[in-house]
Image (cartoon, rainbow, N blue to C red; front, top):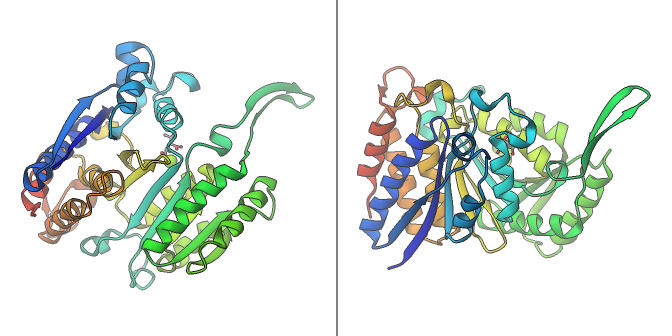
Length: 359
Ligand code: IPM
Ligand code: MG
């Protein structure tokens, strides 16, 4: 019996709806397995801009730091798109990642059996399924490097810097190798070492860390080739490790090839496995407040929280099994709807998953 403090950040758009369903599922887990979860809701993103004038109030960071884990819905929306870069809702995400030291971003891309028809790739290409874990570095590289503007002969110029220090690469490499060890024992490093000096150091460190993992089959792809291979033969990839910038792009691509971005969770972890958990999809303002959003990505993010931060494997599995069961029963939200299935809204989907959770 344990008590876990969870900071919740519903955020914008569909965020509040999907987080509400997820909280109910966690409470059901608590009842069944004898844990208590205490939720503290805080502001971030557009709603925080509206209420406090800034995307990431100091209080939000404080509450997150004093919690055991963070559950986030989504941030952003058209309303705030006109604001300058440092005032946009997305700043909240970058600020949280950096303030909480969340350098390891885990983004699984899984093709669920029941959703094979949603996959945009030809059936023969995905016959063996897709189960890729992208490990993205999340607090370094171009996102956080030196940037600025200056006048040049060719007019105003702007720059962002890609820089990685050895220790930054080493810790994400260790995360990726450990992950590979728990999965298919295969790791693909993705970089651009044929051009970038930062990638050359990145690869040197990966090779150095690899010496401690002789049981893991390691290979390397340049990012352009990786973007191609992941479509040509997605089934041949297990764990992929890459930089913040490349991981941003590659993880969107990987999620799209499963055909159901509304299904995919993510975890962002620090060195102590404290984490922030959120769906991979955005705030979908076009369907916000209409009971149309798919809550499954957020519910599966809660399963990742149970697994990675709380070490509650059985409980995490119970959520995953419930989701599989509900999908197998033919129930679908709009984003994953196909002929002959039963269309339901956010609340109904949340309720069905909750009811399917068994000890
Ligand atoms: C993501 C998003 C963010 C990123 C944006 C919203 C800042 O695209 O989590 O992948 O670029 O990291
Ligand atoms: Mg992205």
